[in-house]
Image 1 (tube, helix red, strand yellow):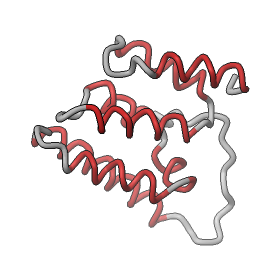
Image 2 (spheres, one colour; image 1 turned 135 degrees about the vertical axis):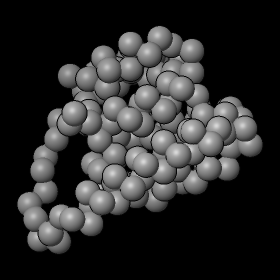
Image 3 (cartoon, helix red, strand yellow; image 1 turned 90 degrees about the vertical axis):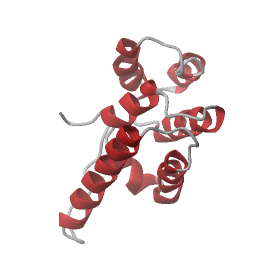
Length: 128
C-alpha cells in the first residue's frame, strides 16, 4: 500500500473527490498511506474550484492526521485553512468545524515536548 502504482490509482480516484460517495474516503486514505502531498493537493484543488467547502473535503480533513500533515508541510496546510476561511459561501458551521480541527492540531503540537521522539507513520489516517 502506498507505492508508485497505488499513487497513480489514488490520483485518478481523488480527481472525483467533490462528487464521490463519502464511504470511499476511508479506503482512499488507506490506499494513499503516508502520501501527504497528494491529499494536500487534492484538498487545495477542491477549495480552488468551489465557493463552498465541499462536504467530502471536510470529511477528509476530519479523517486524516493533521498533526502529521502539519509536521510535513506546515505552510501548505495553513494555506488550505486560510483558503477555507476565504471561501465566499463557506457556512459558519464549516468555518467552526475547520477552526476546531486547527485548534486540535495546535493543542497536540504544543503539548509535545520539543525533544520527543518522532513517530513514524505508514498512513495519515486519524487515530480515532
